[in-house]
Image (cartoon, rainbow over all chains, first blue to last red; front, top):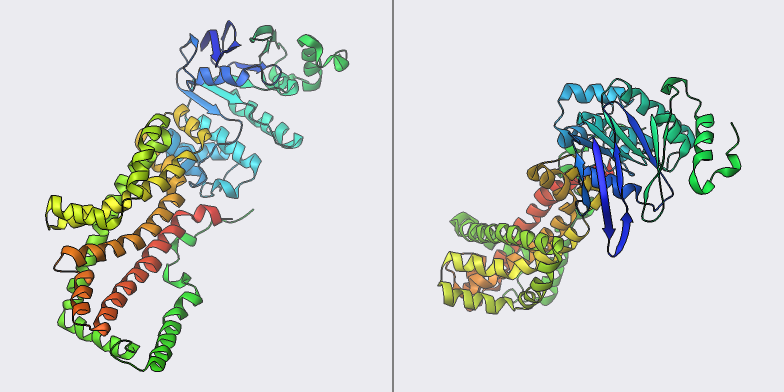
Length: 231
Length: 262
């Protein structure tokens, strides 16, 4: 999947400058940057939700998305939330619910699940679409740290065996460092790519804290400079 | 963690509240005492007298013909008004330009007296069943449109994005994303609609039909037969209560069971 944005305006203000990036099959790329920089805007452009821009999204294949909020249909059961949006078969729905730890919850309404479970259901829904490109917009926001860490491990596990080009928007460098093979940092106004940091340590052997500290040291503007020398 | 609910399977009848079940007895009791105090069977007949008239009309078959005719008109006008009103309301709620142009028209028709619509429909279309149903539907459509427009304005943009990203078909989107969000608005429009519609249907029947509860009330009014007037009115109210408690409310509970689950 490749994306090239030359120009993106909201009203009169230009939000995004020239941005060109690609995500390969099986690769996980994290998109970070200060809040309000236009990360979500870029993601919505890739998702096809925002067509009012100059540039092109090439070869995304089937797209699935995990939104900031679980965005489930509260009036449909967990299984129906997967089936009605993606057309997945009964058997694969059951398999996916097992995979994200929601076995036996197929008939539950989203309101009967905890926020963590709802987010896992949203992840399962994205996987049920069998996507070539997976877009995740702050997928673990407003979870407590322990639940978020569990969600990150789960996300890595389910993405491990699949050849999905994954782009995760996050403001959390620990999250970026844990999950991504490459971290793309946006900055400036209008926003452009400031740095691209490849993370070479294999995902399984990473120490997220160390990696995050290294990333923070690279962060332009030095939001994390106080911790920049932890390594 | 809670269990999946199975309330949807429970029968509607078992869930009617005691207050609703007691209501008919209380009502007849109050009426009986009031009629006794008034002491005039001609102008204020007792429930016993009216009950006898209902039985007699039922035995002759006239009751079923007229209540059935009115019910059929109510149903036809209701379906048309809900369908057209929903379509207009959704269109206006989703499209600002349409709303700007449509709003004055809506206000105009909202304030058009029912009687004028009925008279004009009879004159323009003729004294036909189609004219009667059209007149009632035209009276009701603006109200449904206004209520559904409010519903359309509150549709969740997040769910809309989700449906677009996952490429849900328009039919699936309508059935599983849009309609469930509109269901509460639809239910209140329907509830308010059905009560209003049957009252307008009576006026329509009074002015230009030869069947129906309105026609019978007109006839018995000219004969000054208060008992028969009450008998027909009451029979139809009973039918509408049955519709409310055995059809509308169970349906509403079924449609909103996800809210109460857990």
